Amino acid sequence: MYNYLSGGFSAYLYRDLLLGIRNKTDLVKPLIFFLLISALVPLAIAPEAERLAQLAPGIIWILAVLATLLSVERLFSDDLQDGSLEQMLLSPNMLILPILGKIAAHWLMIGLPLTLLSPLIGIWFSLPVVAVIPMILSLALGTAVLSLIGAVGAALTLPRQGGVLLALLVMPLYMPVLIFGSATIQSAVDGLDWTAPLAILAAFLAIAIALCPLAINAGLRLAKNG
Amino acid sequence: MNLNLQWTWFHRLGSPRWFYQKTQRWLPWLSFIMLSLLIVGLVWGLAYAPPDAKQGNSFRIIYVHVPASVVALAGYYLMAIAGAVGLIWRIKLSYMLMRSAAPIGAALTFIALVTGAIWGKPTWGAYWVWDARITSMLILLFLYIGVMALRHTYSSHEAADKASAILGLVGMVNVPIIYKSVDWWQTLHQPATIKFTGAPSMHPDMFMPLVVMIVGFYIFYAVSLILFTRAEILRREYRASWVKQLVTDKLAEK
Amino acid sequence: MYFDSLQQLIFMDGHGVYVWSAFIISIVVMVGLMVKPLYQKKQEFKNIQLHIKLQQVNQAATQKEALDASHS
Image (cartoon, rainbow over all chains, first blue to last red; front, side, top):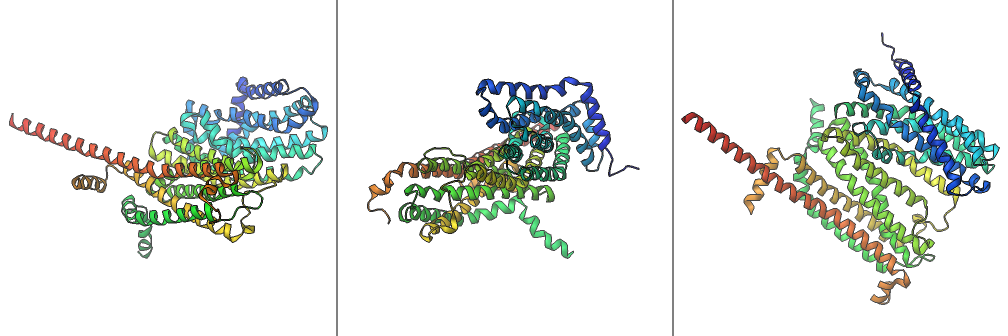
């Protein structure tokens, strides 16, 4: 009998991870983008440690948003092309767990590496040491929210496969995450309590996990028919 | 049986024909109320209300800025709810309302942004300040443009309607979060020295024209929404016999 | 009226440019929101007229064809 609770989650998580690992270039692209643009910032602004440290929380978060946006486009389009999306949609049930499985795989391949790489960027931008742990935590929670919201946009724009439209749909929805994410780091730099904005990020994640799969499910079914 | 009777009004409400014919009768009245309210509010606000103690006469921009932003925000909810009604009960008219609401809301948001920028110059000395209300309005404009742009992704009306409705709902959940986040972000960075509005503390001589203008803008929104929806009904229902009858009657009149 | 003269109403202690430009832009956009759907409606009427005419022509043609076929 089909298990409604765990059905599909681990299967899709495993499948997407496997596909990602076999196709390494897709995995590395967002990370290289993240590092490359970070290296441009000091060149474009100024190599002074103080100014960079001031800008660091904002820049790290903007780059995280852009890197996720770049990668989330492919979340469903590859599946649409090779027909496996249609196979997934054959099920009459809500596809909440398979969708969450795919998004979890996306986060493990994009959000988590970005998070782990961020201390390096922190060193480049002379971010104070006290802010490193808040930065890692806020990125870990925040990129998961970004993946979930981005997946909604990717599902809705599937017939035209993302592009500028995806950015237009998703960017306004990213705004709160960006605000509280950079505020977590900034609070830590300023020596304030950084757990409050982090808690709000966690609340966003809880809401997004509950609601985004519903919208993605509806969007995917539309894309198949439309 | 009883249940059926109760729901017939709901489905009649959802009939494009019923809407087209009823609004034909409502439009002259609504337009009359709209024009009188807007003219009274405009003259009152521009010529009779006293100037603000700190901002002087530039404060009079409030009489378009605030009504436009209030109605633009309410319009987003209306659009999202119309989309939800369409998704749940499959009412065609509801989708038409949703589609018509998007450009009106975007235009009103645009008014709010432009007047806010103009107001900023004499108040803060700069055309653009990242004030909480203006920032939220900018995000709202992007949300509206997103809903309008998403239509072109889909080839059929049906799929486009559903996709816009889903996006509208996602946006509706997000709009309060965005507003609160931006408010919080604003207080974090710089407490605004002069705030746009502060309605409860306003003198009645200043406040009353604002109320008149807000009501006027709501009715303007209703009239514009009705006009856009009527055009949309004709576009989509051109095969319906009542529409053909309407057109041939009009031809005969000439 | 708060202002003593019409000139003062227009000038508004130096804020006139801002206030009047804000109001004029708003009014132009709002008039546009009224005119655009009315224009669209007119266009739709024309389209539907064309549609009806085309249908009539088509019907006449098929009737004539059927008539010709029965004669020959």
